[in-house]
Image (cartoon, rainbow, N blue to C red; front, side, top):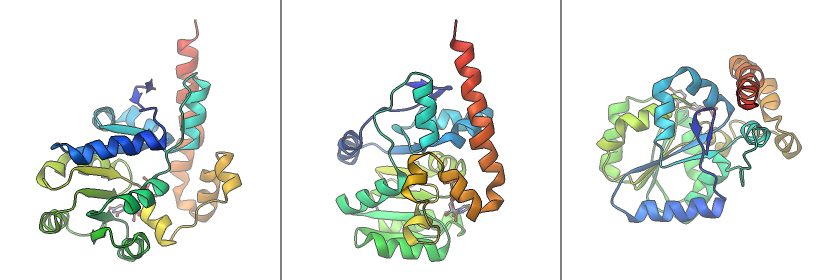
Length: 231
Ligand code: UDP
């Protein structure tokens, strides 16, 4: 399905893992995008970013706001696929994983928390060419990239081919910050109300622009699309 010009694959978590199993078996390279409301806002003004999302092997909904918006526009998404949960489960199920992104401290801690299937790591402030060299030396099959959006998706799009051992790359946003404990997730009741943004804003007020995009611009785009489609 497409919402506001953005492809969303409507899959359950189990179906996502069936797809990933397939990706790791064939001889091509794949990437997954984890969408939330700000992706839609960014893609709306950035054609290149929109194209990258739309040609991803999977683009999944990782945000309550986006889930609500889809429902409002009469698309029923089966499940929210949380990036943090996905990263944890991937590191339980598969081996040969490389973590790239986040601060030195957060990626190192995340690698420890995620365990022995993590075979390499690099923080997101290193020389990018050096990181590609490291990946090619270590030869992971899965590359989790945490540079924030849209940087991580663009980086994957431009560099995946240079790392032939990688069968699957995923942009995971701030996942290593959460897994390492650097950033605390909102309590579950706020998450289920779709108010995680409020929590993040209280603890990270410099995110005001992102909050504005999620709370004002995104609903505005959704409403515009709704009234355009109403006869
Ligand atoms: N980051 C990075 N290099 C950069 C910019 C950002 O490694 O040049 C990391 C940053 O440390 C953080 C993540 O990217 O761990 C972005 O997290 P954020 O929550 O801002 O991303 P979002 O979930 O909004 O895409």
